[in-house]
Image (cartoon, rainbow, N blue to C red; front, side, top):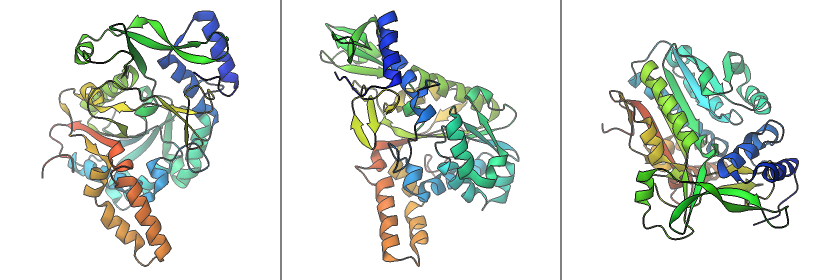
Length: 368
C-alpha cells in the first residue's frame, strides 16, 4: 500500500473508484498506459538511457540485424512472395525497424517486395519513429490497431516487447476461492491499494491446475494478449506469413505476481505515479502459443533470446562489427552481446516464439 506521487491520472483514478468502486488490475493498467490525456505511452519518453527502460534494439544494433536476417530467411522459406507486408507491433522509437531495413537492403528482392506497416497508438511516438526511419518513413503506413492491417498479401510480423504491455487480470486465492484482484482506496480515501473484487476466476482447467496454491497466491491471465494472438493467427492462416514474438515471460502457467512498474530504470510500486511509470507483466508464452495454435499454423518450440540470437550468428556478426575497431569499441560490443544473450541477463529472461504454417521451416526453431 502506498500513497504515491500525486498525478492528474491518480486523481482521476481515485474519483472513478469513489464513484463506481474498485478497478480491476486490467482497467487500472489500461488507464495508466493508454489514457488519451495522461497515459504513459501517450505523454512519456519511455525508451533509452534518458527514459525509464532500455529495450534490446536500444542495447545494440546487433539485435535488429539478427531480427532482420531472420525475416529475410523467413521470407525465403515461405516461398519468397513477390509482395508482402512487413509489420511491427509497438515499434517504440523505430530503432528496431531501422536496423531491420538496413539488413533488408542487402537482399533487394526482399526489400522490393515489402510494404511497411507500424501498429502504434501514440501520436507522439509516431513522430519519433518517423525521425528514426528517415527516408524510409515515406513508405510506412501507421495503424491504431491490427484491425487496420491489409488483407491482400502475406504478413511478416515482429512483436518485440509488445505483449508485456497489454493489460492483464489478476486473481488472489482467499479462503479457497480465486477472487479477482482489484485496486481500491485505503481508509484515508487517498492511498491506492489492492483489494479483493466481487468477481472470480472461472477457468475450470486453470483452477484445477492451481489446486495446491497457498492462501494469498496470485495468478495472472492475459485475455487481451491471447485474443490479439488468436486474431493474428487467423490472419496468418488466411493470408500466409509468419509472426515472431519476443518478450520477457515464462513457458509454463503457474501462480505468481509479475505486475511491475519502472520509473527512471528503477522498480517502484505500481501505485507510485499513475501515468508516469511503465506498467508491465511477464508474458505467459504457454497461453500465447495455445491461442496461436490454429490449423494450419504451428507455434514453434519456445527459445530463450540468447539461444535464438546465437543460432542466428550473433557472435560472428559481433566479430565483424568489432574488426579494426579500438579496444574500447570491442569491449563495448562484447558487453552488448553479454547483455543480449547471456544467462542471467536478457538471454534467458526473454523468450522467443515463432508462429507460421506447418510447412514453413524456420531456423533455428525446426530441425535441419
